[in-house]
Image (cartoon, rainbow, N blue to C red; front, side, top):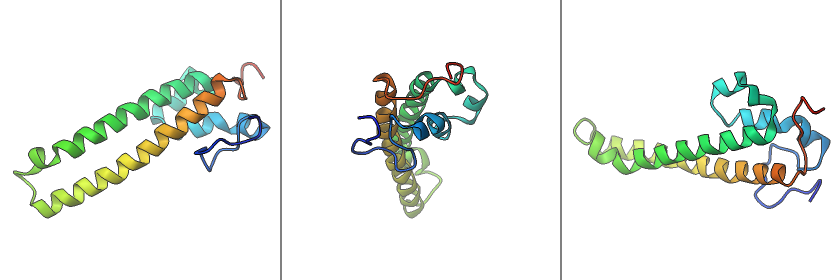
Length: 124
């Protein structure tokens, strides 16, 4: 698998097993996590970072699904139906983005677990 990207691999991340992957994976993961993660000691530990980001994306997706499901009941008293529909469309789009992020982070984490690349900067 080294140097080959599996189906669904992020377009903006080089394939696992390449030097470019090792150089960019932490930054790629940090771009998908909360901003404060950039200050964390795990910011240079690819596998730990992937696990944290996976949890973060999972939680965000759960929140997005809950917001979508409850939009009519929570906002119905204050917003007209057409505005609720707009809000739900926006939530749906964000949910789709998060589903893609969830898949991509999972693929990256799998590659890291298989040892296909990216040692922590402390190991280099």
